[in-house]
Image 1 (cartoon, rainbow, N blue to C red):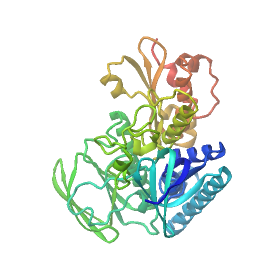
Image 2 (image 1 turned 180 degrees about the horizontal axis):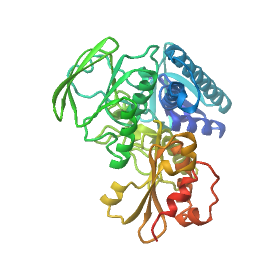
Image 3 (image 1 turned 60 degrees about the vertical axis):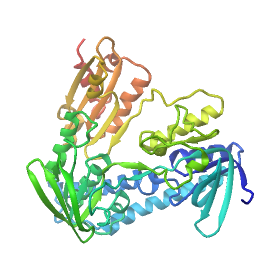
Image 4 (image 1 turned 180 degrees about the vertical axis):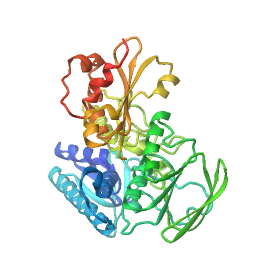
Length: 463
């Protein structure tokens, strides 16, 4: 084997945690290299978080235009130009990539574009995208290879060339009838988006309800919005066969609670979970073990089974959010500097960007019941929040869990407009271990804002 080029820090994958580690270490004077197969900056700025929210917003504009009359604005016939939608998204992505390239240059970290594979402990062979190979080694190695859409084991589905979120965000035309397999967070955002663009949409969920990890009232509130907008939702339904080709004509044979049904559409989209990008990258040769689900086995400091090798983000089984892989970076960074940070006990928020949004942090009712934690629960309908009234965005509710024997805020969920921003207020209070009474009795919340509803919500919590 040829002699490897040596780096202080070697990173496989340029996602949220990997790129932040590269820029930090590069600026710190460490000789740093990042190997990236395709997407500079990882999935978030290219094919996932930001591009999807870009097109979700375009769909909201179309929705508002069609319903302008209820706000006193007459618009006439509204049509959607999917080529223009895609171009607006692509322009944003190009700008984001330029920012990433600037950060690499400014930090001194080297970005190497190619397919990387471990060929030994802390040693990666890279097949360069522009031809040739390089052999790299590192004193410290980080793995940040992410995850990809799962392909369910259904006869005919793979042959149908189904869409994933990647292809769905690159369409230059409007599907006549989009069949979506799975009722998770990414799928619901795309389902509503394409319905608002003008597609007919059918969601097929194998479980008893959409978003099976959420409390039942949360799932029902989101479902009600989707159904009201004309999306067909089939729950407790199993697809047993797929025929045809997505983009032309496709038929899904499904077993529903009322019997077998054939659902004909133009396109089929997979939104049935994700799997780690851990196969085919030589982890055995690196001495890096996987768990039973195919994720890299790490401890609470994100250390793998191989000395001086860490894993960050989706591939390490962290909650699959960009903000979590970025926190993974902070944990590893601080521990390398002598700290004692851990993934244990993290307060992880999340937000689904349907309209209205779903935002959550802390315990859910189901989790409290499962773990035997006594709580006080209060809900506030969004229709009682003044800002929601002014905007005619009254769907949903706020819900809080407070300790039964103390005044700690244990969890918060909101289905409503600007839910992610309101949730962050509660998250800060939880991190500060602030009793809910501080928000109820001391905080002066600006009127009229969505966050003002927190005052009304906490006022209902029983003594």
